[in-house]
Image (cartoon, rainbow, N blue to C red):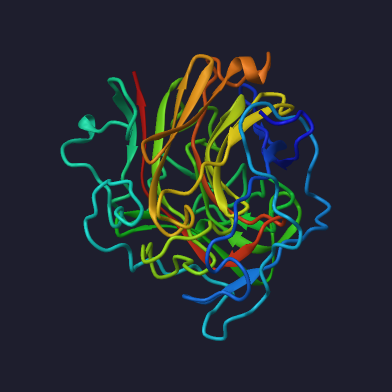
Length: 390
């Protein structure tokens, strides 16, 4: 358990009122881990750019209270990456090419180096169950991303208004957190080869967001919240939510598909989370590692942890992993690759707990973060998203 004065980082704070929009301004941990190979100096492998962290970012929040978990300390200001453009790489406007996809039919093994390709289960979707989670489960939501476009009967693009559908022109949405140097664009969301791809690219000139700010990057975000309606496309109260995700590294950015030749630290700020009243962060990349967190509805307390990398790996990036949460009344337990990664309870989060019977929806995003290293262009891939109830 951390001290009440442990550093935490500002992020998103969902407050959902009937018939109203969502307002977000939350607190998040600043987790970090020791950098793996390729985590310092110029980038290698598939080229691109890596930007050193901005230790003087005025939007970075480093105060608040923390309960539970054993998160690592925030990354130091001098642990950044050198800015070394690669002449062979383009980091200007345009979506990343995702057509390469993965190789092999993989399976759903969860040891380092064994989980390449697609992890679709055999049998019918009704027979699927969350990896490593005990009990009997009934599937209530399943997207295998087997088509060629995003299913907009299930997902919205971006955040709030703006270009939240491909056919809706106008300012790009976002960002959730003012520390992000990005707007969310449908052009950075694609589906092909059995994967959802969410990318980050740098624009030749700043782009305008619905927040009224100009940002340097376009990134991909999708959510089961219906920004044009009064209720989500999909929401749930209690249950298991799981996604199989490939995260980029500073040297394996995913621009040629989710290759699994080498593991490494996680690049940028990818996230898989369930907001509503309070917030369940199933996975977010912070300081080069992956973390889970739970925030109470007042965003004054948060509990969480940043699990160690899998045995034999140098980080959570560059390989396929499953990230799941099991939410029950008063508790939420997290499973990474089917292993129990920790539990948070209402007792630890206080009276403003998000773990009661308040509906939540799903968000997947690839974002920038001025307080950690920034690698671009880069892509995170999602093989499937599934939710079950008992």
